[in-house]
Length: 97
Image (cartoon, rainbow, N blue to C red; front, side, top):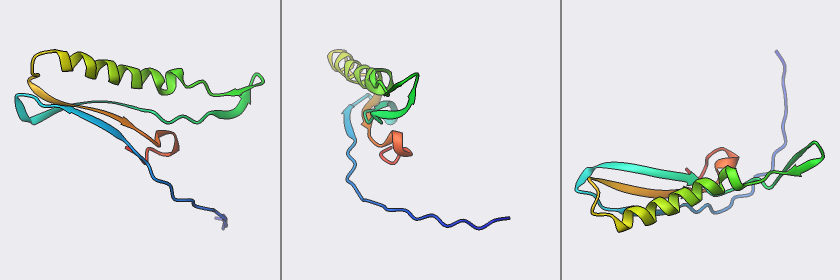
């Protein structure tokens, strides 16, 4: 066994998720389409590159959520209610979800 002491500074920040909803015929059943929009920016260098490119983590997911919302908005009323949500803080433990 061992003892460890850690000094930590905590800075509270506001987190904002973005959500939209298309009402369905059944109000007791939902479909959730989601992605996260935060990104870490830079990381420890890999092959001298420290930029963590966010196109696939997760700009592509957010784009898919937006396009699916646009698609379903133009369609007839769906059978189930659909929520479209983009979450923040996924990269720091999923606090926004």
